Image 1 (cartoon, rainbow, N blue to C red):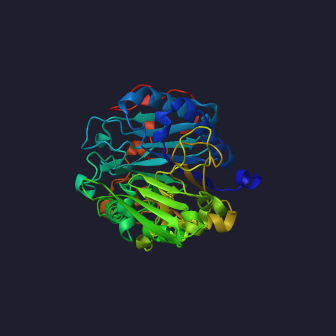
Image 2: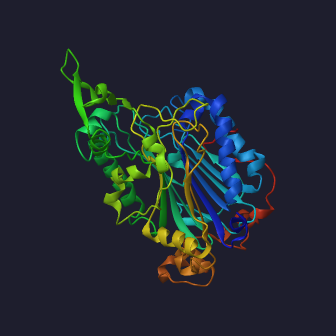
Image 3: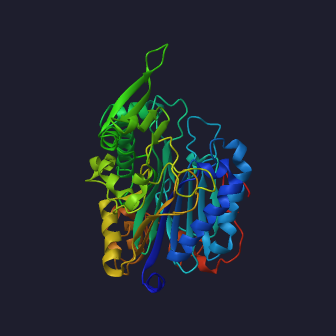
Length: 463
């Protein structure tokens, strides 16, 4: 652990967490969740930290508003986070708008020792220096520091009120520019439908939605940079293959509804051994007799059935998984390792990256051996999803100035872009007040900001 503290470079911590359960049972779950989260922060001591939340506010956002405020206030003001003197929080709270609401929450924390951090303004198309703490909420569509979209309803017509979508922000740290995308993809509405074909129809829906996001973040509107996409992808094991493997020596009994003749249940029994039931499958039931198969050796024997990412192998990279399936854990606060019998356990929560981001992370690993890809709260109830994190360091010199956006390269006298990018002595990507050392609020030293005040930006609530 000493190496993690003393290793040079900029420490980065990326975390994804579906937190819906925390707001359905805040008294029992939030305290444990925050304690485990703070422990990861303490262990890895990041300079820059991103926390992407899905289902923020739980199933009923309006009823959970007070719990949401408490959770955000705790994160921003706790002793464990006191060294993070700059923060940006983006909460989609527009729950009354079925057309736009995604229930996504994105948190970004900057350590007091980190200098000259910039965030991209998508409307002005320039980077702005990050100072202070700001919370944006309600109508994020009008916030220029991010892009937010909800997937069209026809992507998932089975669900009358889906909250799936993505939020994108762009940062420049240690001369590295990258996008961070918070994403929530569609779930399996029925275990029975998922079992019918390989790959399942739901896998195809997720494929379409993720492809849309990837195309969107590399289109021609903005300069292309590396990117990390992390959230609840709802990736599932190939159900048909899993059932065939788990029930190799079993016979299947089909139960149909008396009125419609629709299949409502599948029962798999051993051929001998008193016809013992091995697996029961319903729309929202996946009851396998031996859960240890999902925990033995962290469930890695089942990774061969984790196939959904393979279609993006030329566009996305993921480190090797060495932790158990992240979903669906029991929401009983006394059960930390028990899975619910609602779905086949799967690695829904992931941290993926572009191939250029992969090079950045793997260079950190080869030089410092400080890359960790794991889940949080192994033995503690964290809700139905275990958060997943990636910790790495941007090694000194890992990203030459040429890898920075053209606007920031120009501030260092490396004008590699076409002359039309620049006006006068300032690059197009930065206004005078955004330049290091320039006059104006953005030029003030962020590290001098040590007060606890939080700036509530436009369309924001006071906490």
